[in-house]
Image (cartoon, rainbow, N blue to C red; front, side, top):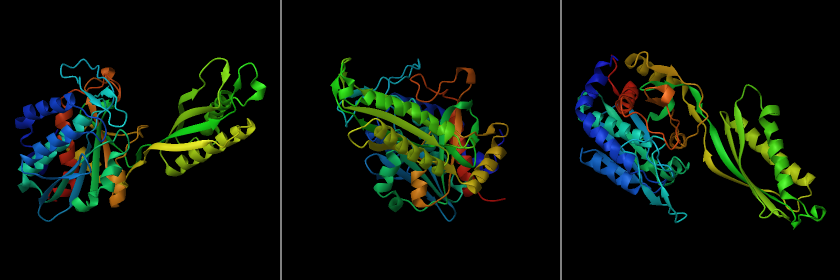
Length: 411
């Protein structure tokens, strides 16, 4: 690795801060919190920023915006998501999470783990803020850190928008984000212009039948038969209605109906999920789903119209071509041989909600978290826990280099 002179100056303390950053990472890893309940996480981030003299403001219940104003120049914002997942960690790490938290919506005490790597994202942004704050002589402009809650439920970015994030930060010239993944070698970086993460929506479909005794199906309308016909017909949307040039997914993840073997119930519930890299394709998927469901209900003599509830809405992550080119050139200059052309990824994010609201270009990239890809564990797996190094260091370096493409003096 051969860092540019400005990047090398800003990152000069990386070795000296490593032990403290690793200890703080372990703290966050062991104390994950549920979406929009990241109270202690937010408080600790604020504590770390304030003791370094970095200005920080709360947005909503747990969102934070940290700002370092350093004279005239571009304005760069960088986002890190901070919530955990409702699952038990089984990574085997000696610092594995054993935390539980009561879900405020359900009242249920549930295990919580950072099985998506948001603790890595927190540490990358904290490290970059510290580096930029310490070495103000190497850059000019404004660097903003956005610590966003509730990415996992697609609620956090919108919560910060609704609570006035635009009022507590200057409008950035570019909005940046990174995500640790198991899909590229440890310490490597990957990005692409255009669609990098899918738009996603979940849909609860309720269809109605007419109850009857199991021995007299002719007197009822069987919602299980109706739902089964819908499930099979939905499989034709991608294979027969979407162009083979446009990747798309329609998944039926759950089918709930009935209570006893000899009772025909009066309703069935299907839980669907869609993914697409194009908003027009996504619209086509949803129109087809509703058309098929309504047609099958009519064919089955359903006594009531079906009901559709859209939730967990993740927008398309569509990297700006010009800004992505700038970040990619900076990565290639500083991390030669460790940067890849990312393929489109089927995962989804709420990252783009804030820059879309602010009407600014954005760039999202991925960070390899496992040194041995043959042993890499996928995100959201209960065993997911990235190798601490070089992941933590590269997370800081990547942010500094990407933001520096705007903030560092031009030769």
